[in-house]
Length: 124
Image 1: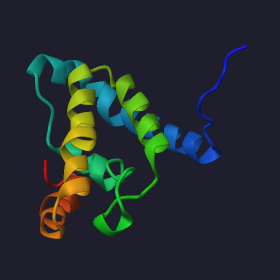
Image 2 (image 1 turned 120 degrees about the vertical axis):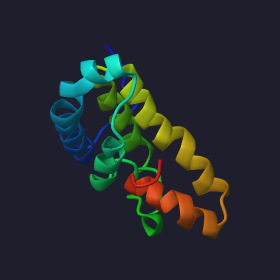
Image 3 (image 1 turned 60 degrees about the horizontal axis):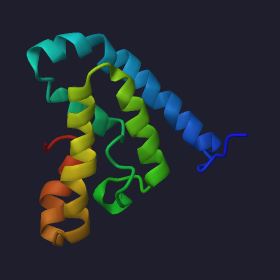
C-alpha cells in the first residue's frame, strides 16, 4: 500500500488542469526552439502573471492569491512538463527564489516596487 503524504482537493485538481492546459498550449510547443536559443521570451512571465500563476504564496494585497504551498507544488510539477528544463527553472526561480525574500524581508516600499510587478510578471 502506498502512503499519501499530501491530499489534494478538488480545487488543487482543477488548478492542476488549468496549469497543465497553459503548459501544453503555451510552453511545450516552443520548448525545443527555446532550448536551442538558450532563452525564452519575457512575455512568458507576463502571461503567467496574467493567469495569477506567480501569486500562490503571496498575500492578496500584493496581487497574490494566497493559495498556499500545495498550489505552488502543483505549479512546479506541471511546469516540469513543458519540455525545457531552462524554461521551468527560469519561471520557477522567479516565483521560488526572487520574490519570496522580498515578500518576507522587504520594506513596504520594496514590496510595492518589486513584489507587486513581479507577481504580475511585469518585472523580472
